[in-house]
Length: 175
Image (cartoon, rainbow, N blue to C red; front, side, top):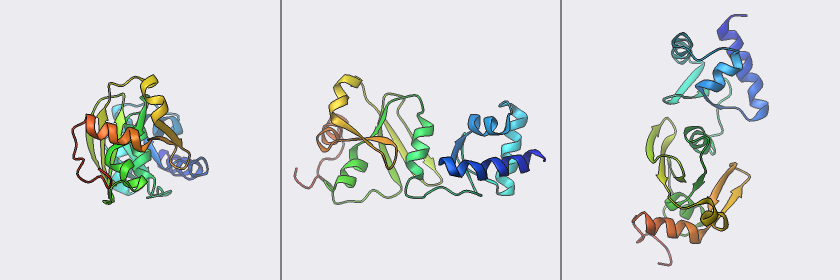
């Protein structure tokens, strides 16, 4: 079995464990490879062949086991800031709870203990906003959403984040 066939097989098996969004290290692990320039070239070739789709630098989805479009931005966000505490907040969370009438399409706003940044991905924009709040300060203002496997801000926390980031509060339904 060549490397492409091995990747196809590994991707097909990964769907049973929820795999559909992968970083380079995960793809290397699936194949028992090291991340090297040669491996990166292999991934580029897989994108050209259509086996993989490059979502953003270092993050891929499988064309064989396409991601759930309703959750793909959450999965991409988790990969982009893996190892840091992150939670959905600001406009994305307030839209989710109905506290703003606008529906955030193709954009996800995430508070993070990691670096701020904005990533234009194949599936939409993921915006990370750094928070200086300690985990102790945040613990009562967030809850875990088992459906997306990420933390979300309470409405109170999301509004406080909106104000502390000096973002537009005019869209709040009960301002």
